[in-house]
Amino acid sequence: MEPGVADQIRQRYESLVHQLGDPEVSPLTVARGFGQLGSIYRAYRLLPEAEECFASAVRFDPKNARWHYFLGHVTRSQGRLSESDASFRRTLELRPEDVPTLVWLAENALDQRDLEVAEQHFERAVRLRPQSARAHFGRGRVELERGEVRAALDHLEAALALQPEATPILYTLGLTWSRLGDPDQADSFFARVPDDDRARIPIAFDDPLLREVADLRESAQSFALSAQKAISQRRYDVAVRDLQRAVELAPERSDTRYNLAACLLLLDRRDEAQGHLERLVAIDPHYVQGFLLLGRVYTVSGDLEQAEQVLLRAQELDPGLTAGPLDEVRRLRGR
Image 1 (tube, one colour):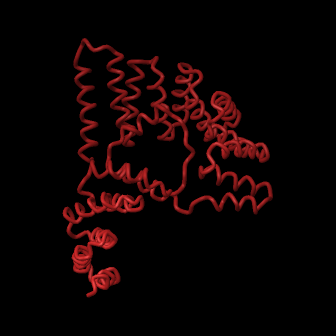
Image 2 (image 1 turned 120 degrees about the horizontal axis):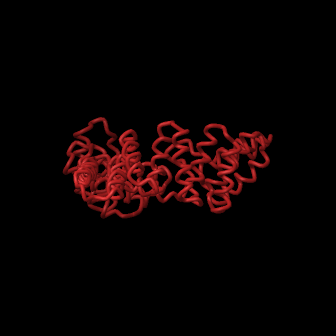
Image 3 (image 1 turned 180 degrees about the vertical axis):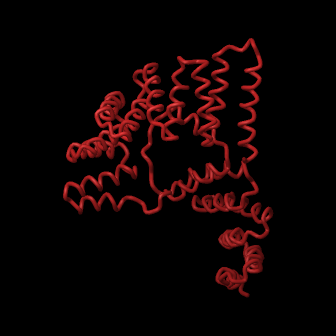
């Protein structure tokens, strides 16, 4: 594991070991220790370890809804839906109006084709939180499964009004209009679905407990992947934020620093981009693309002598590269 990730896990593990060895520590504190370690494991998809921790947290603190909720998610992620249902139902007993729990119970029911239960939970979620696109979308999917296409359309359009760019809603509306015999209307929705999976926008859903777990991820790879998705969606400000964090965690990764510089250029933050590119070629003197992009930055800045030097270095590293950028710089220098 990356050192930062290993440190996160090690610190929580050692804290829990210390608590278990202290006879004065309360069961609630031990439960919290298990839950915190489980959350770290869940953040990095170490699901069996997370499950063991959350199950222990439930044993020590059975009236805390959060541990049941997390256990429901971990067992769901491993395909054990009946166990997941039991945990989510217990969560709902402790938090009777918790919309995320209702939605995940409905998703489990839909996965098991129990349409009546799915409808019941999605409908209750809609009543409690009318602005939840995820709940409206779920109701629409239930009606589609029943063959009630017109009824599905009403719910899907309600979801679309709340999140007009969400890819699953657009795609499902395309399918719905296709089933209604209107291919032109269907195509108008299918055309808005990106070909690149990374450019697809999921349905945003306010799930505070899951967000807590997601926020624990400190791996450079997780930030880099998140940035790639933001880049594909042209959300360069978001990508810069994630790439900056990735560079902090793994400063030696050339591709991450290069992507950060490229995004900064797209946001017209040239000085910052130049600083990262200069650092990149100093750390990795064989990264050809870094020299090429730095040459372009120098050219735009009017520093043609520096531009020629770095482009010559790029050509030394890869003689097959086009001579176009170098010829352009020499032309501008009058050589």
